Amino acid sequence: MAGDSETAVREALAQLGVAHELIHIDPAFADTDAFCERYGYPREKSGNTIIVASRREPRVFAACLTTADRKLDVNHKARELLGVRRLSFASADDTRELTGMMIGGVTIFGLPDGLPLYVDAAVMALDYLIIGGGGRSVKVRLAPDELHKIPGATVVEGLGIAG
Image 1 (cartoon, rainbow, N blue to C red):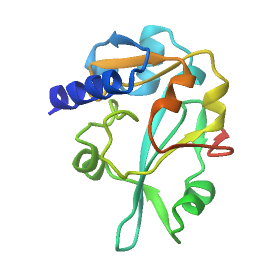
Image 2: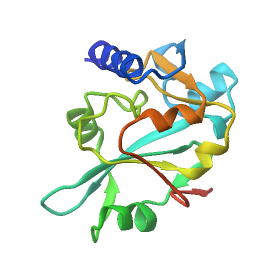
Image 3: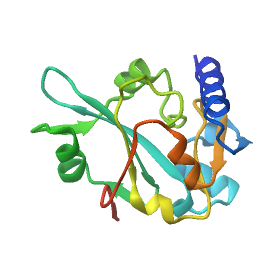
Image 4: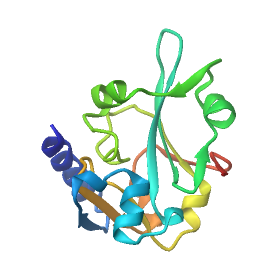
């Protein structure tokens, strides 16, 4: 349930001591482009957490964070990081099953233990970033330096490409 995933995200933020602001939104505007247009935030300061999955068994998953004005380099950089031959975006069902979160609310906080997390280096140059809050009714605003508090998060140059 979205409420449960939002609660898990809030607990993860508290446990990690992440300084943040919650932005409560209309769930109809949770998708990044709609959110930015409705609430007046720039796409380059809005992050997308994208779950990727290998196409062959055994399936391998990872979470990748880049800004909305960049495209995740799934065919080269992300595939290389996971060491698989073929990689694609996880389906909405796979994403929900793996994370407990719906598209439009997926975030880097409260993810399953052991799930690799890759952060595009371009994110770290921002003064603030807005990301999903675990559900479609909340976003999280934080300073990118706060991402260093997430155990196992790896900052990757070139994970996102201008597009």
